[in-house]
Length: 238
Ligand SMILES: C[S@@+](CC[C@H](N)C(=O)[O-])C[C@H]1O[C@@H](n2cnc3c(N)ncnc32)[C@H](O)[C@@H]1O
Image (spheres, rainbow, N blue to C red):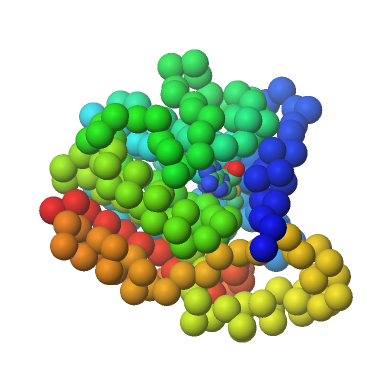
């Protein structure tokens, strides 16, 4: 099956000099039609997800699939202290847009790369945050390459959060819901080459079981209906 997500992400651009969080979220592909104030919903969700992280001022944080930098916006807005922020994304146009994020500075590291080949050294980051990215991967083999990269670059005692992962057990219900929003015909036309990849929770449990403490959790929020069909994973390296 053809996967055209990369082309879509590479077409996201902005004309604005300074982006508001709403602009960043729109560039990052969030469908804001469900609620009046999607920015507030997003901040609450990220607060709930990152509760699992033990942030430290000396942290080197990797935002894997950073888009235009909504997570950096969150870290700064919440006054979370860290040493370095590294953003990686395969979309050059989104990394260009990132430079219009009010919290962008040229001391940040932005890398244009596929997550399957992360240009960072072994044991070089303390935290990996990966929100709403795994659904765009081509197949499970690609996801395995990404997990191997995360494992390679994470320091001892490092932590990973992978969130907004489509649940294979809810695939039929989710697709039925998504079709109901725009009608089946339009859905089939629009998403012909834009599939989402669904995962079994056991995929993450089995991959990480011996080296990591692992927790799988749900973050259901009716204001973000996709969340009803998705799950999140917290990992701490033993
Ligand atoms: C829905 S956006 C999420 C952006 C950001 N994580 C957030 O939560 O606001 C998905 C992002 O993942 C990036 N992405 C998807 N697949 C990728 C891959 N294989 N390698 C690198 N970046 C990828 C896209 O370019 C896009 O910026």
